[in-house]
Image 1 (cartoon, rainbow, N blue to C red):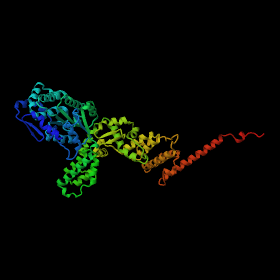
Image 2 (cartoon, helix red, strand yellow):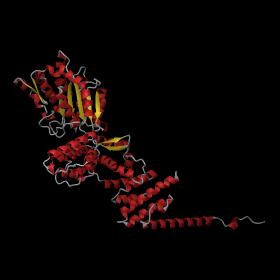
Image 3 (cartoon, rainbow, N blue to C red):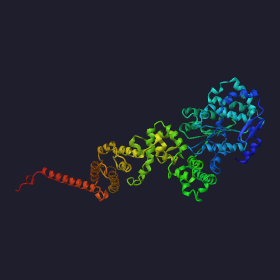
Image 4 (tube, helix red, strand yellow):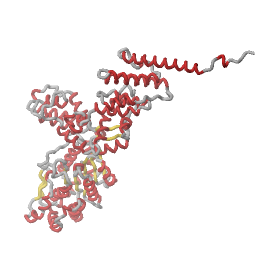
Length: 606
């Protein structure tokens, strides 16, 4: 925070009109309160969630930014708090993917506010804590903190609770109006000197009543109404994932808010590397088996792997380092378990991460479609890298089109998963915010019912692409997918038998198209052989004959399709050529037979 702002706080402080206040660390405690006032405030205390307050003893998730990390984000937020920017932007939205470190940033900001004497009240939502996963305790908890550093309001609040005993049953907007806005404005308007702005910190809005998302919208609208009133003393910092309904709500709020989305622009990998290196140093110093570690442990490659798997999100690195540091086993063994080198005996290092992924994925309305989209993105890089594609562009919507999924379907189905993935219009592919999500989805022991079997999906996708082979591009996509198929099914056999080979009327670029088809043909024959030759030679011959006949129609030379390692293909090819030669001879004979005798058409000699 700037020196100017700190100087201003010394002279103009919201605390200046308070009396009988003791500030100890991060807690505010009012004293010399009459028992009558205390009793009349019991309805308020009954609705307070103590676990939602900064540094509360009941919080199981206290986190803060590691020194030297997220400095750029901190500077931007503190500049906004200081009022150095647009004063009309009284709400700041900090958003980002799951595990990006939003709560750590909010907690660190809150602690810095306390250090600098900035009046602040906070509320930390947490889905797993029934005392702070709903909006019912928000106003009471914020008001409790305001009263702690401004006890002069207690009499007014006690009177209000006496005249409006059911105020906590009213809408969230009315609660803010009667319990916070009106009482605080009374003090602000009656102050002899300008009072400082009051900061409200609300973390994890997406974890508030997540089953009824309209409650989150109601809360944001109420906060906006509180901050947007003329001469309002309130500024509000909100943190959440960028869920679609929250994005729409902030769009409705409009220009009165500022925002940051935690992405690569803020150099998270650099910060994560700093954090991981510091944590490893701490493990080596403090772990009871630290003396058994080699001097060069961990290797640079070990650190690089953790940073890479984090994908710019702190939660993976934090989870891994917490597991290594808290396990009684050798830190070297714990790291090997994280890397998959050593089997996991009992406690998984990814239990916390898996719980987050499971919850997010379980919220999807159409998991079947979402599963196809995620599986498609998981195999897309392999498809694009295959010889058959030869560097041609392939997007997720083109890959999944035979499954009936359009670009619009993909965007819509992924809207519930914005905390972990996002559809990129720029690349027309799905972006995974967490590299570790791939590991989770493909490990049945971790993902359970959400497991994605890429072997089965490759078969399903290849089967869907067979009827779509009506141009060179679709043939190339099919062959690239078919090369990934490792399991045979009756449905796949039916599709291969039913396919009617497509033949272009013309080869627009004969030399180029034939070169492409040679590569495609070779890859397809190799895939067919690997799938059927050892297990069902008769079926293999049937399908191979169909494909070789098609390649022969396209005038692709034998030498470009297979070599001497596939004698059965050579034999079938020769049979096809003999048959074609016989057909041509028979056709010529039939042609000449239809012609009249030369003697009949030769003009008579006169």
